[in-house]
Image (cartoon, rainbow, N blue to C red; front, side, top):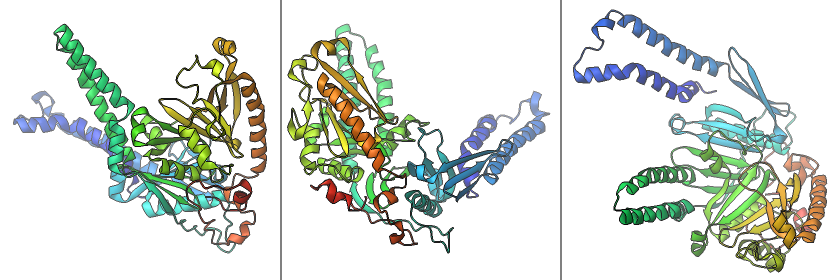
Length: 495
């Protein structure tokens, strides 16, 4: 790791030690009082020596941690050795890497450093972190790991030669004014305004001003939430490269994510009611390794594929996640999933006999299956469209409560990796749900048989040797969802 890593990682602890020992001394100096009381003045040297010893041990601990932290990329694995007294080795198979992130906290940016973090498929428990590397070295290492994970052939004459960083093509960016507008029109803003109106009405009715006190913590919490979302979503850009979808965002702490093709387990497009007049949408994904994180705000940012975007932005991102939509009319099918009702776009909706269970949403609740994915739509006011690639269906379950039995409907739940997306078909006809259960099982089984390797480059380019020893990977294909058949897409290249 970089020699400055101990300071970047441990500056908070060092600052806490300095604050603990220096606060009283600083206050006494400002007040013109003696630095030490008379009863402890004789032991001042021992106190200073003790404080210096604690500081020295802390610094030595960070230095030893840095010295004994080493990494290796070899033999299809990435390995990280850490620990001085208690040694630990973590390793991850390159062909099981789900995503790679480059994170730059503010202090690391000042030093030109970055943390490289790559996730494997066990909900974040085995995330391998390299903190900290020079930013150029982190990018180079990311390119090498992604190339190995994709199955890019290695030059036999120079097996340890690093792979060049793949070119990228920017697809979209989120303007700051749109991000601010989305925060002001969010659900939490609505409820805070509603709470403020209720407080004013209660204060006027009871002639008591205490109700205004409840607005203070709400305003503080709202401001903190707004700042966190703005800081995470600022300067959001999405690009496509041969090694996957690249997302960049952040104001003070910046982050660059790389999602390899096919690693997204499920996708959700949602539209709150206040966004509908402006035509804005939000996209979230389930990715193996992102399910459990240390910080809820970090997890929300990492599972957001698009914080706020237009319909054209949504279609562009869908084209990256699902290069082969599996239907000759993708615009009509996915458009019906976002805004349609009843049988628009070939969707099968809730039967009319069950409209009393969902008076507003029964015409929206429905599903459609293409050759590559299952689409589930729901919500009349809070619109949602969930897309699950067939090969990412882990298991399924049918649910039917007493009221559902009375009206002859059932819910079908698709199980994927943990995340913000919960694929659930609501209130489908009982016979329709049973038929879909069998059909989706067959689709998922067939799709998994077609996927013979975890190395995505070998899935789309069987003759990998034709790419050459340099291993730049296939050229990216990016664009909106266009009308094409699966046979036409099968012969093309992967985005």
